Image 1 (tube, protein in one colour):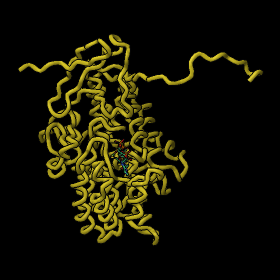
Image 2 (cartoon, helix red, strand yellow):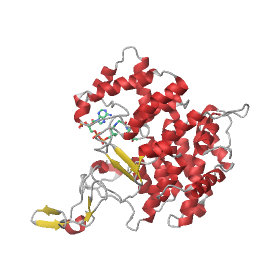
Image 3 (cartoon, rainbow, N blue to C red):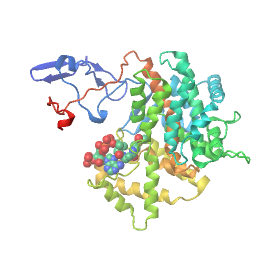
Image 4 (cartoon, protein in one colour):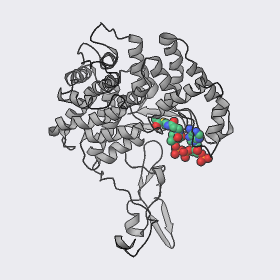
Length: 430
Ligand code: ACO
C-alpha cells in the first residue's frame, strides 16, 4: 500500500507535507515550505526533533543502544581496525584495501610536520593555557598556510586539506601539551604509526630513548575509534553550520573543537574525573550524596558522564569502555580508586527511580577518562584526545555537506518575543 504524506492542520487549512524517507530510524517531514505557505515556523529548542541533514555516515539507534559507521558495528571496528582505517571509512565510504591503506598511512606521515613558523604561535600562549584553546586556535591558524585548499567544492582540495588536518592533529595536540609543561616540542617520526607517533610526541624527551608501549598504543587506538563519529552531535553540527557558509575545512573544524570543549559535550570526560576525584578525596562525600545532588532540581550539579540526547539505553561505547577499563588497569596501572567509585555511582544511579525513569545511562565520557588516566594522560588533555578521535567524523560530515546539492547556508528562524515599536529617547534624556 502506498504510504500517505503526513497532513498538518492549521485552522481550516490542511497541508500535505512531503516525507524524507530514512533507510534506518526516523524518516523526516519536510517543513521547508511551511513558513512560505502557512506563515508559521517550527520551534524546536536544541534541535531535539529536527534533522538538519540527510547523512550516510553514522547511524545511532538510541533505543537499542547500537552504533554503526557506514553500516559496520562499532564493536567490530574497535576490535579489528586501526584508527586510520576507520578514518578512511568515514571519509570515503568504504574500508581501504591494502594498497589504499598504505597510501593513506604514507600521506599521514608526509604531512605530519608543522610549519616552523607555528612554533612561535605555540610559544605565545601562557603556560597555564588549556590545551583545547591551543588546539582550536592552531587548527584555525594552519588554514593560513593552505589558502590554495580553501575551496570547499574542489574535490582535490578537500582531500588535500583533510589529509593535512588529520596528519598534523597529533603534532598540534602533543605540542599543546608540551607547551604547558615547558619541555621541548618533539617532532614526528616516520618510522612510527599514527598512534605511536602521537604518544612519542606527547611523552618523549630529547634527552633519552623513549619506547612506545604497545599496550598503550593498542588501547589508545580503540579509544580513538570509539570517538570517531556520532551523527549530528553538537560539535559536528557546529562544523556543518560553520561550513555551510562555505568556510574552509580548518576554520569549520576549529569551531567544532570549541563546541566539543563544553562540559555538556566532550568536556565531560575531564569533569567526570574531577567529580570522581572529589568523591575519593573528600572524606564526607559519598556516592549517595552525589546522586542526591544530581536529582536536586535546586542544584545545578549533574552526574557527569550520564545521560545522552539520543541514547535511551546504555551507550554501546560506554559498554565497551567499562570492560576495557578493567583490562587496561590490569595491564598498565593496577587498581584505581576512581574506577571503584565510578562503578558504585553507576550501580546507584541505574537502580534509582530518577535515572531509570529518565533513561539516563553512562555515556562515552563516563569511563573514558579513567582509561586516559591509566594510560598516563594528564586530565586537561582528555578533551583533546576526544578531539583527535572525532576529527575524521567532523571532516566526513563537512565533506558530505559540501557534496550534497541540498545544502544551503544554515540560518534558523526565531520566534520573536521582545519589545515592539518603542519611542527612541536621545542619550541626554535617558
Ligand atoms: N544528571 C542528572 N540529571 C540529568 C542528567 C544528569 N547527568 N542528564 C539529564 N538529566 C535529567 C534532566 O535534568 C532532565 O530532567 P527533567 O525531565 O526532570 O527536567 C532529564 O534528565 C532530561 O535531560 P535533558 O537535559 O533535557 O537532556 P538533553 O538531551 O538536553 O541533555 C546531556 C543531554 C547534555 C548529555 C545531559 O544528559 C547532561 O547534561 N549530561 C551530563 C553531561 C555529560 O555527560 N555530557 C556528555 C554527553 S556525551 C557527549 O557529548 C560525548
